[in-house]
Length: 152
Image (cartoon, rainbow, N blue to C red; front, top):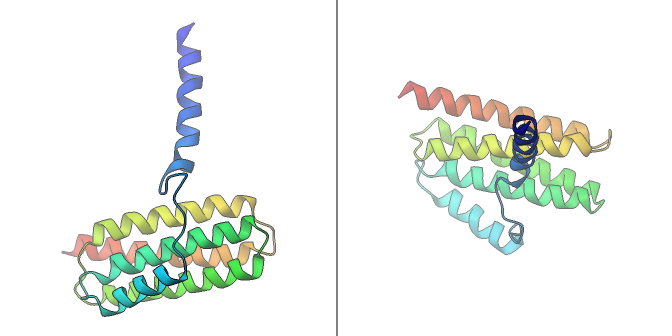
């Protein structure tokens, strides 16, 4: 008798858990000034730190795009996703050099792709191609990161 109730509770907790990953409820995406500082820091960073910093930028731009989609600002959200794709491309370039903090960056990229897949479920048909393109690029970056990680 207890087993079905326990299973139901466990299923509810596990279903809600992925939605709570990442940021806390009171956290907000960085503003334009913070993004500019983080971008400058990533551009000036050593090749070892660049994948992590660009992964943080991709994650931040995904958070911003999510808020924009939820506010009905589809054009701005698409622009934010294009910017996230640009940062993902920079991760790929920085992987060609000596990359450190790779494991943390890979985890953040994987988490960001997961959040975009969640967002895609509720997105309109018009918005899905931009989301899918970003997800594909993040999956490629994650694959390259894993290849680099296991090559060492």
